[in-house]
Image (spheres, rainbow, N blue to C red):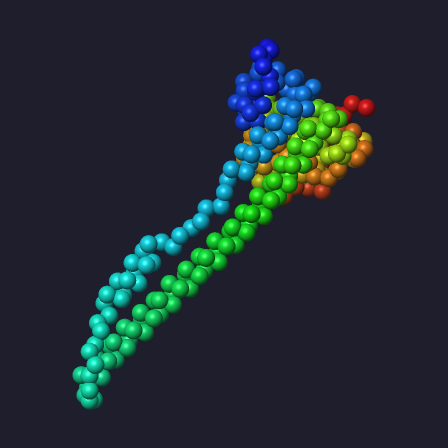
Length: 250
């Protein structure tokens, strides 16, 4: 089938909202349209950056508990003289005061811990966002390169893999659609095929059927890209035959 205006389908393609015929037609258009390749990369990168760090506030029960302790502390009026009853009363007040101070210290420590944790979480989130931004920019540079070439192959269970290569950027971007979940304890690993020698090029997310990733390392003289199923964490060399192999025409 043909698309009425294929340029309007980049967002739907990035979100895997096209049916099989539409996807095939759009990918045929994608081979010759750097603008659409750039749009697909930007849509996919934007979707990946939507997750933000969520601040966690102290539970209300913590504050309520301290306030209840305070309400139970009876303030004693000033007394003169020394007698057992006064000493016992003063002792009880001192005990309650110590308990209250201990509770207050606990609250301060807890709130300080939460603040420290939130600060660390924010720093981690910012670092992840910066890395995602840098990766998105590199993906966009490859997909938008004037010399970008697209190579595709079929993967198991009707999935499809596409590799976009820019010799000028010396980098490659891999996209997958309809990818099945790997077996438990396994992961999909990408490889550059250096004329028969497989070079590790990164892992795919195990729980996403559609994804786009900048392959690790440079293309150099690679003759293709392979995809294998490996133990979690990946392997230095393939342990099983490729489930997909994309060759780069000479």
